Amino acid sequence: MRPEIRELAERLWDYHHVGHALERSEVVLVLCSHDTAVAERGAQLYLEGWAPRLVFSGGLGVITRNLWSEPEAELFAGIAREMGVPGSAILVETRSTNTGENVRFTRKLLAGRGPEPRSVILVQKPYMERRAYATFKRYWPEPRVHVTSPQVSFEEYLERYSNRALTADDVVGIMVGDLQRIRLYPEKGFQIPQEIPADVWAAYEELVRLGYDKYLV
Image 1 (cartoon, rainbow, N blue to C red):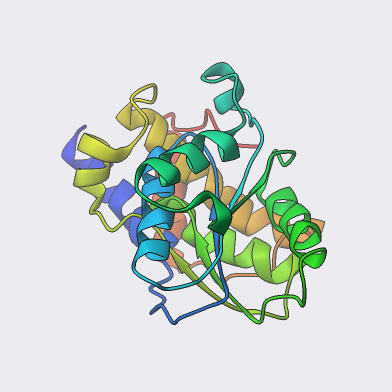
Image 2 (cartoon, rainbow, N blue to C red; image 1 turned 120 degrees about the vertical axis):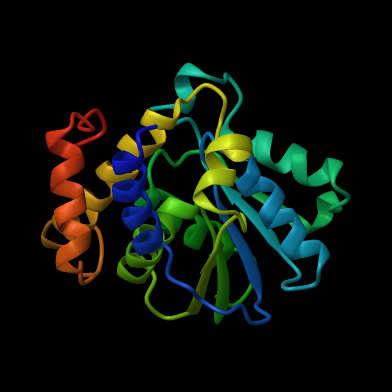
């Protein structure tokens, strides 16, 4: 990756992180995807005692329907069990195909199992923290929510943690697409608004000009 591309991409990477400090909560909710490092992060949080329940939400999305036949949530739950999470602590939601459905379907799933949680730790890919937060607060505003992701740098993520079916350019393109959604989706009713600093939007526009437009809506 050329240095100028990396600098622009890291500007988006930093913006997508919300920087929440975690607190002990009632549920760890893992938003599933192509990135199994997110499953490992969710399992790690459960094993460290951050919450007594671990929920994996995800069917097959735009990317994963070309990678796997098993729903994302089932595959992620298997990773958690291999890491030592007891099956009795895990719930899976396997119908959702986007972040809004992750939140809405998980809320329905938990509604049949006692009072709604008052606090949730939301686990997502590093470059989707902000959009996950904005979507959660749109569809489920009541609980306190803290967002986290695999604790890695941009360089480490590209080298070790991203799905091997995706190139570094794919990851940058997905970040570009997510930033566009942060701008567009509030007016569609899909997210709460998030301020985008001028320098971040300028980096987005330059990356689009350079051809990183594959994942735009």
